[in-house]
Length: 423
Image (cartoon, rainbow, N blue to C red):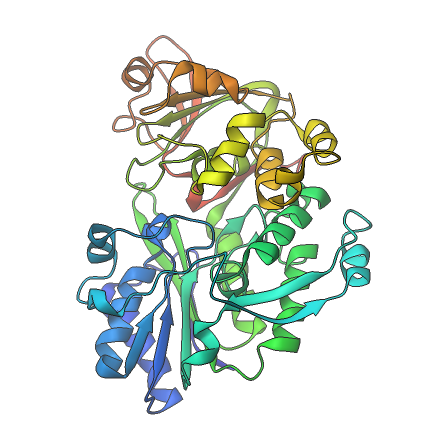
């Protein structure tokens, strides 16, 4: 059922309109006595999910039993991040998701199904795992809140991914990530019809029907001045609501170019991007737009580590972004990598496969560390002076010396490709 829908590529929902839309949906659902809120974490600060979570808390007050940020494999939020993203929500309501413990396996999708939808890329089964908190609270409403945007693992983010990955377990996260990587990231991004989403949707149909889940989904894009704008709000309990949001996201967040780009410069906000695990969105989202032999420059003042998880960080440092053939070869004999398939998937995602160069300009990692994972290194201060994020326009820019670049202020907002590559 769809409780509320509004959005278009020209819409700009105000804070008041966002509140009215949420309240309209919540009134239709009737009185609730125990509510669980599942928003994204600080890495989705721009999603407006923080504001919607605060509005939902203000609406239900004492009926809100807990807030469970959908961390997935990310680090827990700090007190300062919680206060900044969820103003007015009592900090004692927040629970920390642990992707290795405190989980419930609802059932398994058989290996034959995964082999069929992946065209033989994988042949393992998949566990439908969520935080046990979803099952143990006797809730009469679980409100999953987040942003629909192109995504490297699920094609388009949000909907049931927020639960099966955001509150999921190690096996489920590892296998879903590797499923997408083995099938081919460029065959998935920007599409709701793909093997990963097929598996998530089948798991929803089989294992989530008895849970009172409603999805609050935003679509956020940039206006003509480069400022973020809330283009859509879709609230419902089924896939049809998600498909509406995804359709708008493709209009708002997907930039189709007529020709490939020779040089792309991406800026990573230091508040959001402290690891390549997150910051490699600069590679994922631009790879289909970059010309063979082109260059991607990543301005990363907050970059201080590779993985959000200590074990994964060590695996990235050990192997680096060496390309798909190398990762598949390592998987034949390396037990730690076999047990961390999401890390293997990330190593594939973060490689340009030798098609273009990646120059990383980190604020907290050394030249030796950057070059050890097969990226080029450049000095951050020097590159920030040349490519000043405050003075560059979103998209095409010509510098004073005639150099032409394509600038992206936040890669999480979109997906870029040229027409011949996206088919």
